[in-house]
Structures are given as C-alpha cells and as structure tokens.
Picture 1 (cartoon, helix red, strand yellow):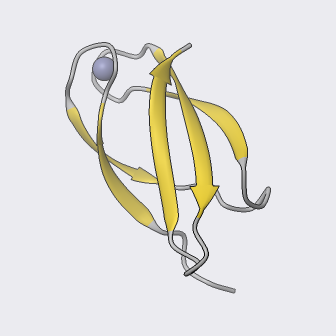
Picture 2 (spheres, protein in one colour; picture 1 turned 180 degrees about the vertical axis):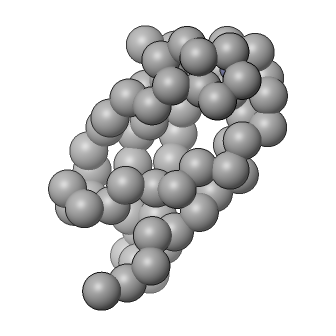
Picture 3 (spheres, helix red, strand yellow; picture 1 turned 180 degrees about the horizontal axis):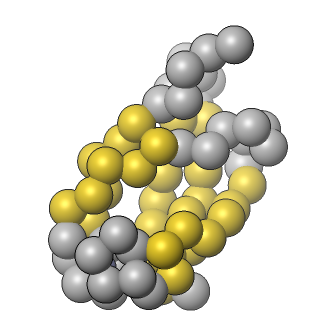
Length: 62
Ligand SMILES: [Zn+2]
C-alpha cells in the first residue's frame, strides 16, 4: 500500500498554510470535504491525478 501523498495548501477561508494528507482511497477525480485545522470551515478538496501519477489537490470554499 502506498503512503498517502501530502500537499501544502492554503485554506480558502483564512489563508492558513496547511499540510493536507490527500485521501486517494476513492481513486482519481473525486472531491471530499475536510475541515480547516485553523478556522474549522469545511474546505472542498478536489483531487486529480496527472498522467505521471502525481496527485494534485485544489481547494474551494464549500
Ligand atoms: Zn482556514
């Protein structure tokens, strides 16, 4: 089992810098919500995987 990839992101609400463990268990091209560790707002995390197998997370306000 591969380790979960990490990505440094900025919270779309409070702009805090966070290290997210990307939940890749559901496969490529999915979204989930995770609460910001600083302001506790629900961030919508879009996960995509490029052709090299690298994961990319994009955050939005839910
Ligand atoms: Zn925040």
